[in-house]
Length: 319
Image (cartoon, rainbow, N blue to C red; front, side, top):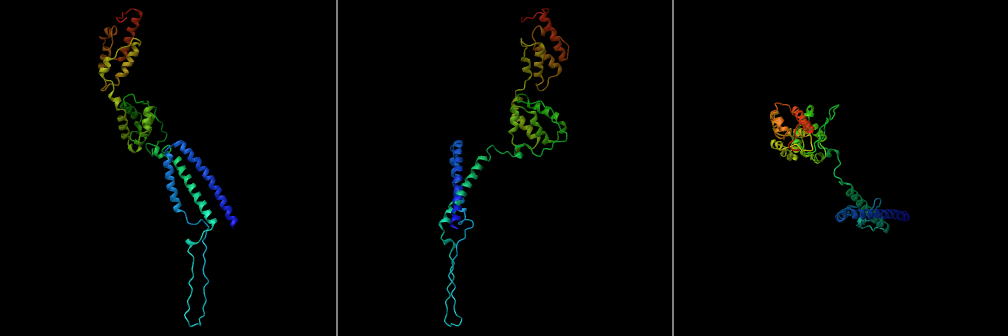
């Protein structure tokens, strides 16, 4: 029996030594990777180990304390004299002496429980919340989105955060007009109309703050409101001039692209007058009296004047 107990003790001791080596390597890696934070972790682990020791049973599994009893005294029923009966004495289990082998088993089991607890804590520290939550329900901005059958995401114009955000919302809603009453689908598909910094902004939104499409639209307008404040006005259009390195057609398109951003929009007549006023001779001299109300006609006239200047038939005061 003693040989079997000693063999068990030796096996437990070998397991404990192996666990100690693993723990030492883990603590060394944590010390290198985390520096001072390991001190706090170690102190917390020590506190938890003490708690484990307090909760450990007094005896190992399978160990039963011995009980001893004194023999019961017999007496004769015919004896008239009072007879005293000696009480049985059962030894207290807590006061039963523990053998040396039992002590070793208790120590080895206590060490094993400590190491197992430390390893469990270290695994939790290394693996839990290292990269934040990866639960899909928490990563999604909106849950329970129902994609209609045969739904195909429209080809949106990508917004990069440099133009008017309100114009982008108008464009997006018009392409999603068939699903204008499906707030969850509108919120879900909005990310497909963003690119670059605006896409990263969308990824950082808090799902607890976005419950309806209006919540997302208001947050989007608030984020890129500065682009609304910098929208060109009529004065910006009047200050524009044709560059020497660009053709008349290139300048007309550049001016027109800026003009469509002006709010409130320009009327056709106002558009023509304002564009001609930005021109210099010889374009202004020959176009100021034009009665055309179509911007494409103005471009055609300007290209003809440009061709005449290149051929030398029309003099250019700037040359």
